Image 1 (cartoon, rainbow, N blue to C red):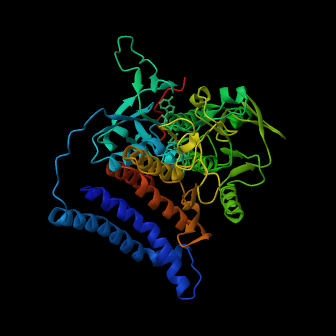
Image 2 (cartoon, rainbow, N blue to C red):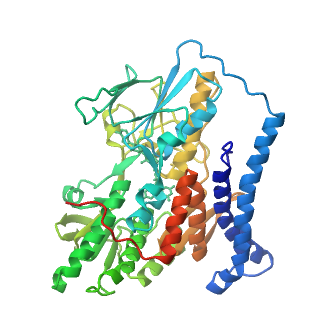
Image 3 (spheres, rainbow, N blue to C red):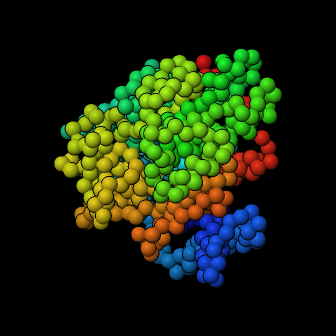
Length: 519
Ligand SMILES: Cc1cc2nc3c(=O)[nH]c(=O)nc-3n(C[C@H](O)[C@H](O)[C@H](O)COP(=O)(O)OP(=O)(O)OC[C@H]3O[C@@H](n4cnc5c(N)ncnc54)[C@H](O)[C@@H]3O)c2cc1C
């Protein structure tokens, strides 16, 4: 892990959180295996492992604070004396990053590191939203476990040297090297509308792709942004309120039926979270009974979670079915009408439809003459530059990237976007210094997916044995999910807030306060 100087409490929390997956891997799996036993994660066994968990968390926290402390001390005593940076000579190079998601934010952060002694370049980040959304926890916002703002880290507080402009990019003039922003809502605004660049980084992410079904686009909820998750949560509560005073069971059923299209990670995590939420709030609605909430997951293939191995995907489905989620597999969503979801083989009466079944790269890219793949993502070369356009780079969900070592297409995930950002920043800095670029290569670390109450599936790659993966599921995988993602969530304050939300969730029922008026 890269050290953040003087961020001792943040390092302590990150180290402590990483103690959880280490506990799982070493105490629960490796040590029993080495002594010839099968790893067990029954409730009884987990209780026996609990003291080791405390030990690992304390060890992680201590390591997290002692090592950077010693490094800082050593640097202070033996390190080079800090020198005032020389003033920049000549014209400054302007690096402009479009998009403040995982790819854009990490590019800015790494550029700040790469160029910390170079004042001849200035970095600007332009984004529609002023915070980085931590999407792996989005389902928990929709399921009312986490407060919405707790999973978003303000870009301004994470970046120190980068100029941040909150605005929507409407066009890019590649010939004159300028980015155009939408006018601010206020007529009297005198904000900048044009931003010139020398290096331009496209990190604009993706949008939902409704595959040309305009009725579905009109009626379905998206599940990509914080606002989408807030809307879904409020809508679910609204449906419960209306169902509670509805006498006719025939009219009540569609109010309490929630259809989720797409059986990938986002759809499965949302189905699990909504199922827990719906069943968890039943106690507040005395006129409804436990058999009434109906969460339906529609998926076009014969099994969910194609990113995981078949055995884990089947386990996820079985666990979710046990908890009341229904599955329509090998079924395509073909149309939607108010109160009706139409599949290839049946119709479901439902007032709620959430779309997670397809994404397409940001539509702004359609206006640019770059070469694109069939999804519409910008094709880049191995150092992640756009061929034929000097100083233009693309990464993350809006780029079509091939791994330089394996030749395989890189998946559109945050895990990859972050590593791509490190290479883009390194290559921009190399170009400024007249050095050769580095090609992009990254071996996936694996995948984790929460399927509902204290249950997850994990498939992790082993660092020295990339062809083999460790698979496990249940409570252990869920604890690992929480430990890993808490450690990855940027910012100490956000980590504490999320930890508090999770602690509150253990003791109190889900919050059913409606926070926005959906009308
Ligand atoms: C529900 C959900 C769960 C997920 N879980 C995981 C997970 O567990 N692990 C994992 O690795 N990946 C996960 N992903 C995928 C991951 O979120 C994406 O791969 C990642 O966000 C891609 O990063 P990005 O920076 O390319 O795009 P984004 O994060 O989408 O960022 C795009 C940025 O561009 C900005 N933008 C867009 N258009 C404009 C414009 N015109 N002008 C200015 N700014 C603009 C947006 O505001 C945003 O800040 C999940 C995704 C979702 C939706």
